Each structure stands twice: as C-alpha cells, then as structure tokens.
Image 1 (cartoon, rainbow, N blue to C red):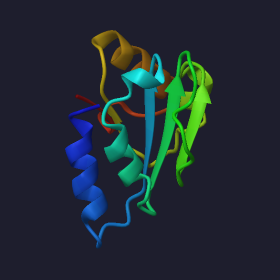
Image 2 (cartoon, rainbow, N blue to C red):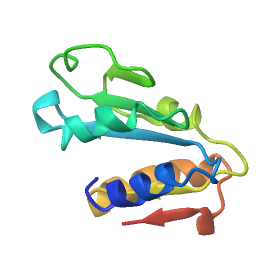
Image 3 (cartoon, rainbow, N blue to C red):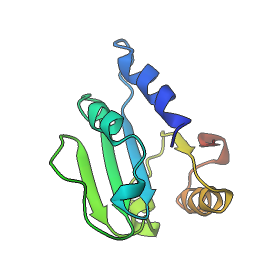
Image 4 (cartoon, rainbow, N blue to C red):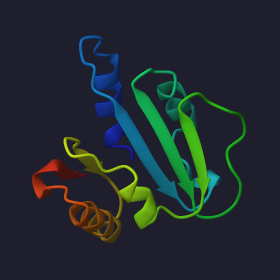
Length: 118
C-alpha cells in the first residue's frame, strides 16, 4: 500500500489529468488499515474511489464519499467486477497475493503488461 500512495497523490493533484482511480484495498481487519486519514482525504477527489475489503471485524466508523466497505475477502467476484479493457492495474502486497490477484486479472483478459507489481 505504501508505495502506491505517493503515486496516487501525484496523479490526483494533476489538474490536467482526467484519469480515474479505483483502489481496491484488502486487509484482515480495520485495525490493519494503513494511513486511514490519508485514504479519507483521497476519497474527496472526484476521480478517486476506494473499496475496502475487510476479512473480519467491523467497518471503519463514519461515511465517506467515494468509499465502500465490503465485509469479506477480496475474491474472484471483486476482481471480476472491476476489470475493464483499457485499464492498468497496480498491485502491492505479498508475492503470493500479487500472484493470485494478477492471475485473476489475466483470466479476465488483462494483458500482463497492464499489471504492475510493487
């Protein structure tokens, strides 16, 4: 997660760039969320959406624009619902996690050069 945040901040602050971003963030529980205040700030941008998948526990308090919380693991359905033909995908996490999600993206027709791993 940490390597992606500076990239997102730079892209979102570029007023001439109309790229949209949808961050799928998966963790075990809300206590494991990294930099929740920064994520909340990013949700205020018109071109940013955040979907948080929590394996257990309860959702973070409060409602934010452009944020959805899913109580459950990021699985095949979550990945399938987000695949579009012209999108690029930035993955960050353990090697096993990135392999699993990368394989799901490729099964949905995403070309390997559109998947970037950090």
